[in-house]
Length: 238
Image (cartoon, rainbow, N blue to C red; front, side):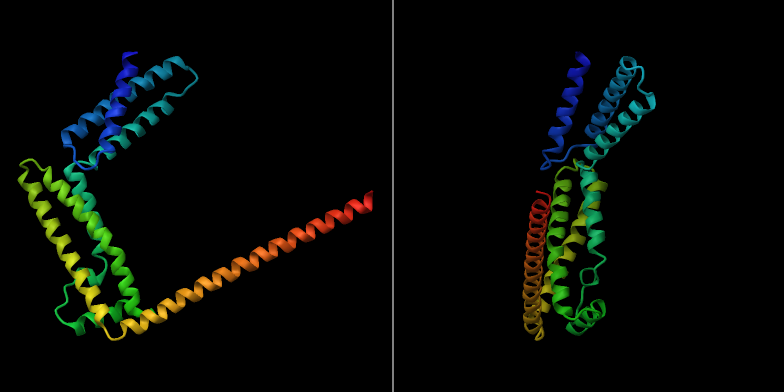
């Protein structure tokens, strides 16, 4: 019974920690939680093997290792280091976008890059605008992870420096996105391209609606044919 209670308490602790992401947990806590889960899983694996002789030890050991690994991963991603790594991964993805990575000093260089990046797009300004708008919440989330990590560093000077560097990088990306959006909206071709884009969207919606209506009519016709065939067969054999 004591082992069962210990397992339940550990699972509840892990669940509570992961469901409370506003405050980070320390690495020692994460390591302790993962170690406790490893011990409990090993104990459970042993008891299952003893009780059910037909159960292969490899199965229970594999399951215990999997649960322990998942627990370790989930706990460590909520530590300051884990949150900072997640933020940096998001920023690395955002940095793949040229308009975000580069700070353009001139309008000419900026729009030349837009044309190069969206060379195959019919509406390059709209494509660039939509892409940048979609990156805004990603950068916001990265900033929130960095701020949460920074608030929990607890006198770790090196980690604080890493947080500051990531924060500076995220702020630079956000500024580049904001400047790029403003430049695109101010361009003389933005509104004409936006009008064409909205017309294309409307046409696509109408096309989809027509296809759905045609499909529904086809299904009704097939059902009617099936009913007619069924009635004919009944009349034939009665």
